[in-house]
Image 1 (tube, rainbow, N blue to C red):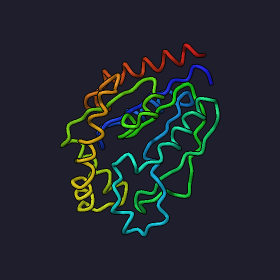
Image 2: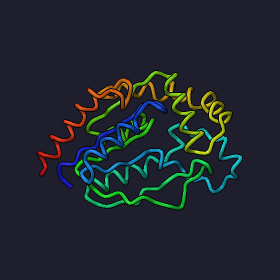
Image 3: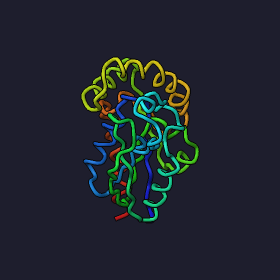
Length: 207
């Protein structure tokens, strides 16, 4: 497809990336397709559950980013892709896939997407969502215990062991590649409105 723009939305865990992504998708419907980096965690059928639970899921190596890049390139060519999904309770890729169709705007969302050079180069607009660390960990605790079947102790242990150090090593340094930095995520209505207007103008120009 000609005149396709790819928008990357990155930031730390619990920063508000998904809120912004969902609002964009809801506002523009079929003109926007979304690829979530989290859906591209590598499959680990070779490991028992106990070992999978110990893996570092906040390191770039945890993701099959090459597959995401293949899917992004395919969407740009106007092709439909079957996106993998991930089972957070089982710590493994699920059997189900999600059909993602080409669109005028492709949003790629994930904590580490700017830390991957090949992926970062493919993003026309790069947005980094920056939210206070205390707010982010509280959001993560609520999300992982309510939505992902995790215990409070496991969430805290994972945060201290991998999430925080990987944020400092990979996520925070990647903000330098951003074109736009949005403070306070989806609560920043001024920034959100500006992003929406940019997307709307692109869609209108390609009609």
